[in-house]
Length: 91
Image (cartoon, rainbow, N blue to C red):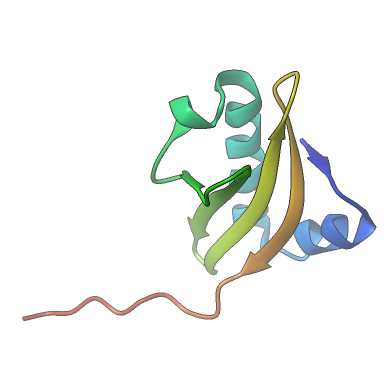
């Protein structure tokens, strides 16, 4: 996994430890198998050349936006925590 710049490095480092370790694990799976084989719920296409890594953990939900470069290399462009989980509706 490669990041675009030091800003993205800091975004990744700011994630809670459990979410960061899951993010790194999923990134490795993408490099090994490609985004289509990893698929949902961890990977989602955002159209064109952009993909989303979807991670959840004890402390919330995180997302990472990346592109898939040649040679099975991913370049992470942005990492962030979602503000809150969507509530489950109990009907």
